[in-house]
Length: 53
Image 1: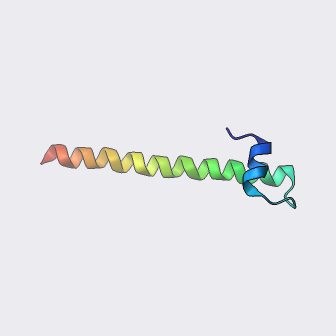
Image 2: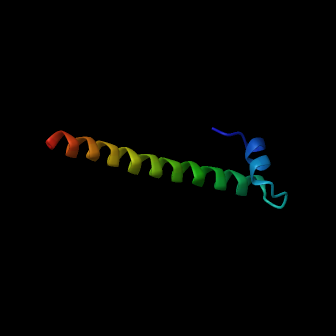
């Protein structure tokens, strides 16, 4: 996981509180998990379709 300090550097917004930075970081990780799950499901489906041909 990216540290709070690194997250602050990447966001580059000194007006954000630590709690806001942590929330943004956590939500980005959740979004990444969703994107990965969709990609993985599509990969598995693609293999199944190719196998059936």
